[in-house]
Picture (cartoon, rainbow, N blue to C red):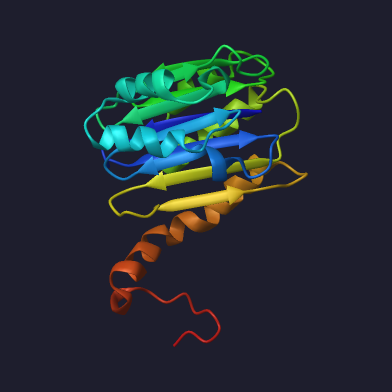
Length: 224
């Protein structure tokens, strides 16, 4: 039902992930990241509790592999789950239970991991990781490019309807959290358009939160 990629940028310290699925509102259930700690995707027959649990473990000092291993041993119905994680050291980890749906696979590299289930092609995660590792620029751009590469490599076996991007930086809230919760058109294309709109304004929204008096105006109606 889902293909995703989680990643870390060692230059900026940012964490982020992208995900797409035939199910509605996939990012609302599957995307988890915490500034200075890591990023976790919990997918397949999703248990949204796994992401925050893994991040709590990592915040207390566990590596990504240790956190995922603890989830594997202690989580509920883990044979149905698929979990990806990357921590601040750049170590990545993936777990896929024996009852993950359909054709599933995963791929990993330094600072990145990708996985999917009900895939059209088992090579989709490897293509996503390869695109990410051979790209440059802001983390958000690299994430969007990896998601597009996964879709073009086959993506899910059926049509996808939702997609999302989650990006965290230095603050306790997301630097970017963009979601296409349902569309009969291509959600990855819609997510690319949302990112193209949001990216130029992203830093200004942080400035508005930290110091509204110094934040720029966008000239919206009623704005002084």
